Image (cartoon, rainbow, N blue to C red):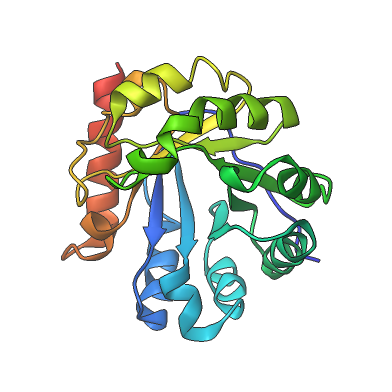
Length: 224
């Protein structure tokens, strides 16, 4: 079992590894070891599907940053637990679970005690307004009661971040949707988030490490 590290509740940047090139991902993980700032890495399904769970171990080998498995786990308790277990065992420090699946699934993963559990409360895309947003406050209350470590709130809707952070007081908040989806660096953090998530604007840049440092600096400057 790989020793896992916990995320800290402080301002930082999570880099979404949603690329398909495994070698590129490994090299970026190496480069980020020396980056100036508070960073974490989030491995999405697009990258995972290239090699399976082994990509988690591969990135862990090259990086000393907290590693989040973004499988957006959404299944029955037994299967969800198994997915999370495999991700932690491969080296993930945290897993992301859909909050709408309910308390039994979330409790099953929290009870593993193997790493951070991050629950999705609201998503960034317009379709989230149709079914998730109408119940997101109830989801937020549920995950707060359960005692998850972190929650996902949409940087594309900073007013929702501002409202929902008042409910999830004991978790850290990560907010995707920066740059490619239209939110500006700092939009979520100035409204109460702890981390912002950036993907394409970093890994598609000519110099991804420099892009990560520059966006991180922009975020921090907005918080001061």
